[in-house]
Image 1: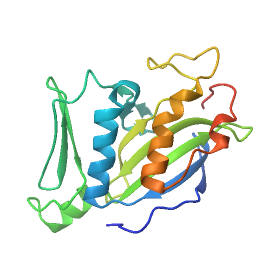
Image 2: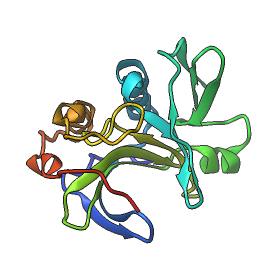
Image 3: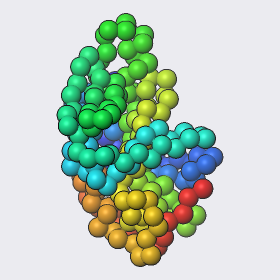
Image 4: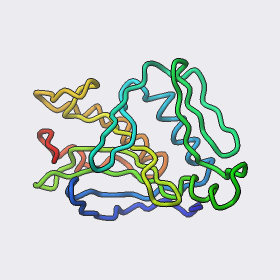
Length: 189
C-alpha cells in the first residue's frame, strides 16, 4: 500500500465522459484513510454526496444524519447511520486470505477536480479504488455552483469550497488555489 508523501502538483487526466480532471494521489495506509473518511463523515456529512460513480451508474447518496458510529474491524471501515451502513476495506484484511485481502483493500485514493471546457473547475471530490482498480466510492464535495440538494445556484457560493480547502491543506499540505474560484457556473457531460 502507498504510504509515500502525497503529490503537491496534480496529474492532468482526460477521461471519455468526465473531460479534463486534476488528480492528486493520496496515501492509502489505513491511518490516513481512516482519518480522511472520519473527517468527511463526522465534520462534513451535511454537505457531501457519496457512492460509486461508474459508466452507466451514479449513486449520489446524502447521509441521513451524522453517523452513529465509525468503526474498523479486520481492515474494514464501517460507517453506520443506524438504519443503514456501508463498509470499505481500508486496511489489512486477513479473514479472506491474502489474495482477496489484496483485491479488497483500497490501493488508490485521490482528490480530484473536474474542469469545464474553459479550464475552470466545476466539480470537486475524493475517489477510492480497490486492488483491481475498481471504484469503491466517490465522495462529491460541496460545490459552489450547487445546493446541498444538487440544485444549480443562480450565483456561485465559493464558501462551499471550505471542505475542499480543508482536505487540500490537511492531506496534501496545499493552501487554497485561486483556480478553484475561477468558474462561473456548473456544467457536466
